[in-house]
Image (cartoon, rainbow, N blue to C red):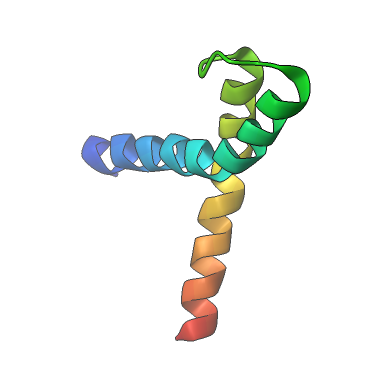
Length: 65
């Protein structure tokens, strides 16, 4: 497997995680007063939700097909 593909996949994983947790994170900020964008909780949520979103996108592509 090509290293470029692996790097792209990892970046997509992280980016999707960040986007997916953004709304929830803003809710957490409002609830608990976190202001830092790079709070450890946010980073952990991004890593956890990245693969879930990738699977979701693949399922949607399969369903629409």
